[in-house]
Image (tube, rainbow, N blue to C red; front, side, top):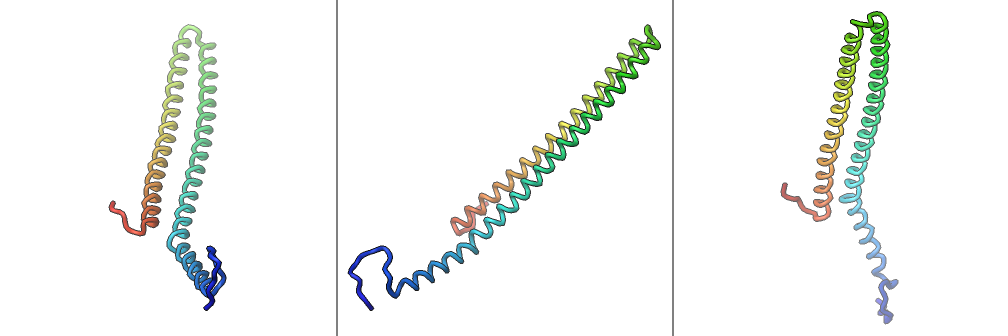
Length: 151
């Protein structure tokens, strides 16, 4: 064995090979225990978020479709109301107003139902994301501390 008089952080001698092997084993173990499970959880979370984004876009398209349909219905009701008014000027005026009012109430009801459904889906998605993030935090803490945390 050779004695090196130069003091340095890394010296090229017989222990360099052993240090390299120990480092590679450490990297392999860290990859198996920590990095792979963490990457798996991150991938699952990303796919879940993407799924929620797609559902939100679909819900927005459905809302737009319902709004267009409501506009068409409103237009049809207005046309009908105008025809009745022209035919029955005196008595038809009040009837046309009632039809228009009921149509607006129906439109508002359908619109409120659609908004409530979208808000419920968003709330459900937020709750699920909260649960997922809590699970992810616990997993990360358990892996970092290398022990089981109390619930």
